[in-house]
Length: 140
Length: 394
Ligand SMILES: [Zn+2]
Image 1 (cartoon, rainbow over the protein chains, first blue to last red):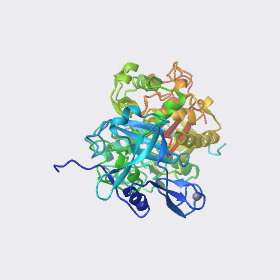
Image 2 (cartoon, rainbow over the protein chains, first blue to last red):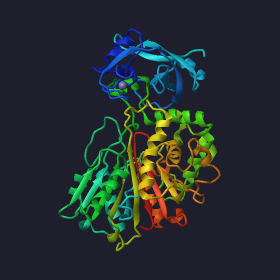
Image 3 (cartoon, rainbow over the protein chains, first blue to last red):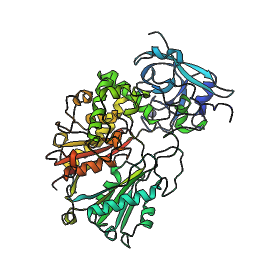
Image 4 (cartoon, chains in turn purple, orange):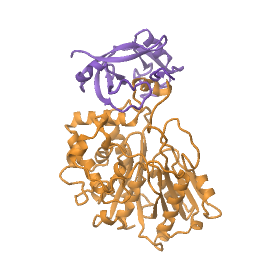
């Protein structure tokens, strides 16, 4: 294979397709329980809080706080060889405590990342079908 | 307190050769370890009438060839001249390394068998351990793999960063743990780093894996096997070695499912759930332990276990481990054999073996004086774990 391998891309399934469809339209949606209002991410078949099976995707603000982060140095994942070192973020979305999303940060922002720092979503169009939610640093 | 306390014992320990990549198939390494454990116990193969293992291959998407990648109950049953009529066996698919030991204890207490062989054989798949090569990310991986987050060490790196931020710990504090482990490994002839000392500066100079974790925060992937022989306390008294009595145990599996979407508090809470059962069943507490063998697949785990098991308060482990407190001659020796960071990734079997050696006075140069009760706990502590307390007296 002469071409460089692509990063792993999401294989949407019945459960997760609404998330990726919305991302394609540059909208961030998160699965919310219709019974108790709890947000579940990654999507679940039963609510983590109340075990209701009635769950729907709803738009969220796309704003959050850096819960933690690390900088990956190991060339461990095909498609990321050219990107090391890169930042992995664990973002706590504003909608709910412990509502976490994993993301990357633009390479130029590596020096700005800090726990408790504010971030907002943006979307990276990877190909015709997939847009990945990413996060970037915003002013407090 | 648990009615089974002190009624069963570990009476034999056997190691195969431990190497980074063995020329010998894993199944033969397992046989070596099992034979060594039986010989150590002074139990003949035909006396073994119970078998159990936790065979999981710790790699994503790899094959499962019995005798090469894993070593199942059926493999050992077919390869060793054990009792012609095996009375009990179990292959554990959930839990962690102490889990098959716990099942062996249950079987012995129930009278289902008399002598149990327990083994854990680990294969190191070729290529980079835990590497991700697929271009597709399905299931919950679709929310992490596209971001280049697939490895357990990345997950640990993120939570250790949070820990440092929350409690004011630094890498220098973690260096104390890692160098103490190395100092202990320098007294363990089985350890990879038996002859190599490590200073704080050596630790701080090592390369990043996922910042803030460096090379020396990671255990060493190895191929090999550790086996144990268990029997009832009554039978144990007639055998060659002093028994290491099983005083109590705990297990835990988190009900949460994803690898990355966790808070640091979840780590500790999951470990506390295991420790609560461990102390309640044994009727002993952290202050009764003469040493602690605490899982160190990645170095921060041991600090979380110190807090979760109540050896110190929440957020205190980084300061607790300073000033020689966890050294061999300290008030709570930790990972007296060097841990997985030095002996290799046996997923906690090395920790159990060392607990046995310490309470039976067989730890040689590493022996701590008056070791009457030692715990061995495996797990992250997130997701799943299991632990034992072994004692010198029943
Ligand atoms: Zn609900």
